[in-house]
Image (cartoon, rainbow, N blue to C red; front, side):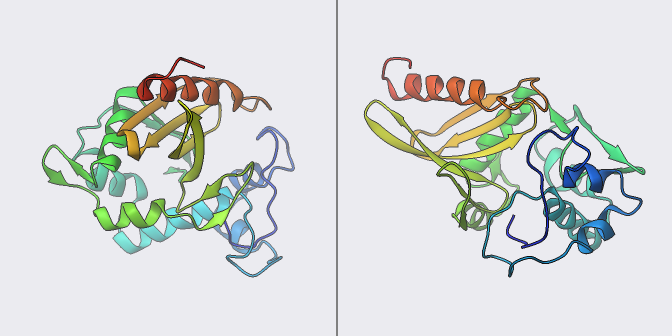
Length: 219
């Protein structure tokens, strides 16, 4: 999210000028991203960019020598017994920047894997060092939050104390929150796709869950 490219993903994805929407409908999405003008040096400014995630997916596929979906199945889904999922496709390939749908139970499993240092059912699925590195703040983002490697990082108050959290956010209000200090995983699913206030209800639900986990009155 710090590629420094000309990119505008603000507002609804139904908006024709949305950069991710333009990428999705481009004849060559990867070329579309790579041809964006560079506005600032990489690493200097936060700008949410699904194109950067698309590039990461392409790198993973080329480096592994496998389609991204197959890589995800072998490296993550199968070791975690995740069998039910949907993943949006474009020209026969899954889209790295969105469209992956998991059932809540499997999202909780993913959260537990992350809080347990990459281990699931006694097996090391993801290197613990990589999880720690990916959770480290890399740049200031929006609304007082920070950003790691594809993770939102923030703080919320419960019981008179502030708690650091890590989160994955999806369009419509999908959320996976992790609170390492409380060993807490909170999964929220919703359907407020492309709504300007879609972030409000998930944060309210998370704050209530955080308050209950900490033992303070629900807010």
